[in-house]
Length: 240
Image: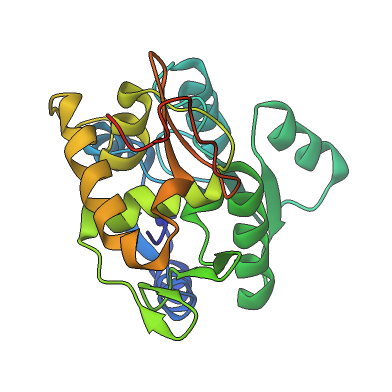
């Protein structure tokens, strides 16, 4: 599941440069030239990260970041500020309003991608382009492939996203509603039992590897991904 990055930048040349380098790094991108258009995009679907220019028309990037941080739905979106301001006081101001990092112009595309990778690894590991591997089970977000040893595992798009999220958040229990929000998206409205259907499909796809037991049911709570299989008293952990 490659991350979707919202670029809020009023200079077209800079937007195009960033979009090109994001594509090369395996990320999706969507652009807005001001805060109003950015908010319309965010209203439709949350991005995984925002690259936010400080000097925007009508509303500054700092003011827009404040709006995002005050809103319950958007307050956790990672933000990297882009600005020509180099004074320490400006950097502190950007970080104090809740930005996760700060990149000064002119910037190296390689540095920008490295900063994006670092923020995503820290805050949203399943949105990173980094390979995830656990005891031979390997998920490559750039090539969109899942393998066990030398054999590829065929997964549908939803099962792929579900596995990516769970492999990036091992040992933690997630409820059905939490999985719906994190895997399906906050603007997708489906029944919670839909999660059960895709869990079954994912386990079936992993069955030949012997690692289907890593997707564990925690009764009354939800699901957990653990490479340490826990066998309950009835001898099975696959019930839903």
